[in-house]
Image (cartoon, rainbow, N blue to C red; front, top):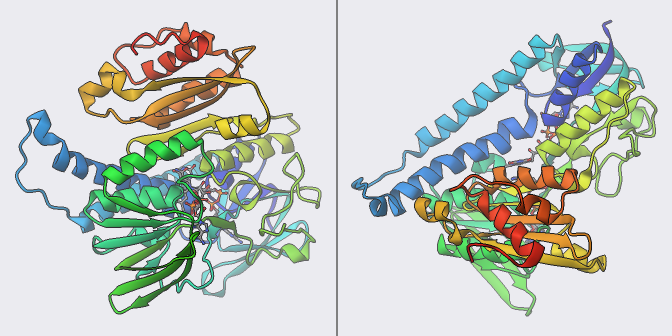
Length: 467
Ligand code: FAD
Ligand code: NAD
């Protein structure tokens, strides 16, 4: 039986990054994946395929709505959805193969099958066609990720009532796509189909979109999505969704007690994801989960069983690929005897709509709740020369800084390429920069980054230059 210093169960961004870091640190490492391709949710049915479709659909949207103004005449445009999906599949394929290459390069043994604890050191692997083998591990990292939540009353048939997994491979453009949940998945995939011509109706339980983010971003995003043709029902609870022939009928009730009935041809369930631990045999080692099914861990991401760690979506915290990656590195370095650190407050959140939304640190709502004395500097994207040149004028950057010390406490952005721009805020905040520190740094002209400088100027002494 093969013996390893570290065995990792699950090959998503948490698991495969942990494996690479373990190997870099000289640990003999194996990774187990139940599917035929590596990369987990993120590479196969999450981050990468959704961004591939977001980019394709945005090209179409721009060609249809903006090229004329740029002086580019295209004639009538059509969408070849099959080709769009095929390109997405090719991107996924290349990316997953890239992970397999990285495993080989780092001499990490890959086992395909369901990994399950027989005891604390022995993992059974149930492969295809009844193939079964066992391996021994000194340490184990559980990185088994998450699956979509399906709420009661929803008849998830995977054909018309679907989750993100099916929405990434539809055979036709919906006429009317109803989306349950105005969070990240709903708004990203809703954007894809809205740009391709679908009518989109979002039914959301909360009183605003992306309710975990700063409310300024919710308001701005709602405005731009409305322009794209989205319809919204807030404070509305879905009671049922059922397929009837080629239609989906959804019933819901709102906070005024009114009943709502909607008819569409597809319904996307996007109400969150839950930790996935099925088949892991946690009961054989006495590992417990919390009331939401997440594996309980301590400050070193160790379960109550010494030597068994858990990371990524299967544990508490944001369900994000880069959070899972940081935790993978953290555990690998901890196992190797190092003393790593993760600043959870500085894990950025991004929504890849257009304009993009990005956020790091405290929201205004959180600062109010904590009674922190703060000041606000805000700068609209439309005031940038770069934005007018590219015709991407929607959005703003808002900087929240401590009123007394000027330290940046939170940065909230909506605008073109802010998914990339947010990195500047993360660096500044990691080094505990003041708004004035950033305001005094040179930002290339003309770029979108100037909005960050201007928002910091606005926060410093209300002295934005181009307002
Ligand atoms: P996962 O990526 O879920 O990987 C877990 C792996 O473990 C899976 O491959 C699974 O098959 C395997 N596994 C489970 N049980 C076993 C077992 N017993 N034995 C062997 N293998 C097992 N996050 C971002 O940061 N940015 C984005 O843009 C983004 N977009 C997303 C879009 C969509 C549509 C979705 C659904 C998610 C998106 N996410 C995004 C979230 C991101 O995908 C997850 O946060 C991330 O994949 C979590 O990584 P993980 O390693 O914890 O788990
Ligand atoms: P989410 O938590 O972002 O949004 C779910 C939304 O559904 C919330 O607004 C919630 O109020 C609403 N909701 C819950 N129950 C409801 C009900 N019964 N009726 C109506 N609305 C209801 O979850 P998601 O969009 O499903 O995404 C799942 C996870 O995947 C998230 O944690 C997210 O971090 C991750 N993800 C990240 C990205 C990204 O980083 N760009 C993209 C996609 C997914």
